[in-house]
Length: 125
Image (cartoon, rainbow, N blue to C red; front, top):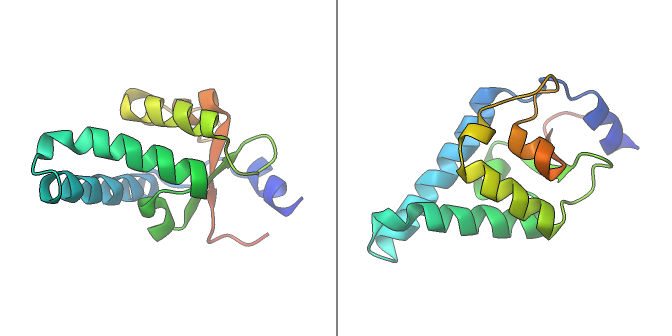
């Protein structure tokens, strides 16, 4: 019940600044991988897509999310997102417009359509 009660109270809980910081960390890491390992900075979006999809599917958080203490959860019960939810969320996230458009609960359109939410791991019940 602890996680779910946090989701119920999460209205505007996570600032846009923390979201953008996590996203920026992920983007810079993916850029470094694309440039350093693949020799092509133009592949950054593809590396970013793979990083977000895999880490969200299996760990509930990207590297940037972990650094800023955020976690992706199912909105309905606070559990781990399914791979399908992670795929929907990731596809919509790379379309950017869905990631910067928010509802009354502070959830991005990519979170609403995938049935996920960001949980602030710094907050205690």
